[in-house]
Length: 122
Image 1 (tube, rainbow, N blue to C red):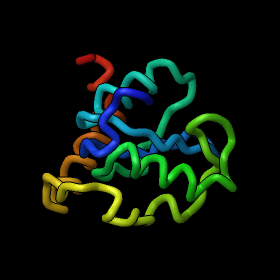
Image 2 (cartoon, rainbow, N blue to C red):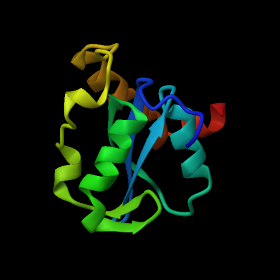
Image 3 (cartoon, helix red, strand yellow):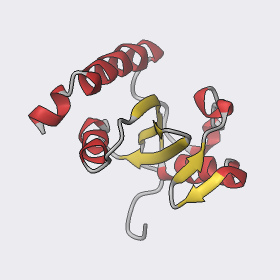
Image 4 (tube, one colour):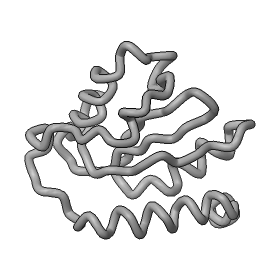
């Protein structure tokens, strides 16, 4: 990922397909990215969580779960993926949104994915 700002705060998402979890980064709130993955995946994906982070955060998470690596950014599921909190020193700026923002937007995103509304809007 040359030329990208590894310190730019974006979003880290964890999506699950059966026993596999994709840990990915998006510089914008990842609704379009997740909908795109769903549209190209024959199985239903489940959004596990979204947290703010940088490309460095994503890399840290990939390294943390190396022992679970399946292929690329896909890992075998581990319960810790639902709760892990990456070190805050991986990003140079404070998070832009309060914790309450994550919960309400995650619920809205999950509901929209379940109802297929994102795929209809994208």
